[in-house]
Image 1 (tube, rainbow, N blue to C red):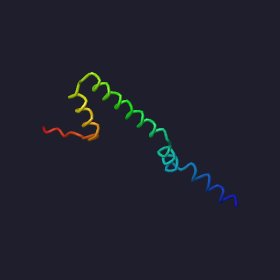
Image 2: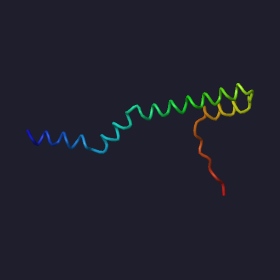
Image 3: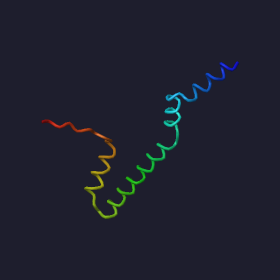
Image 4: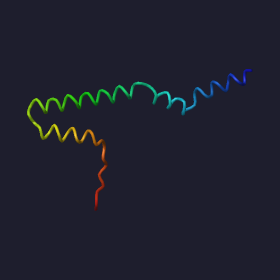
Length: 73
């Protein structure tokens, strides 16, 4: 019986388990939503200042997401 209880302790300290719990936490979700809200405020400021080019450029860049560039050299 003690052997089975020791296995439970081993599984709880497993690095995979710790990473999974950290990934599933709301911390990263909250950070992502904070970033999205700040971007929306930035675009609203562009529109209020009648900077249409900046607003459309920012919105299109945001919609496309991260696009890595390759350097030819």
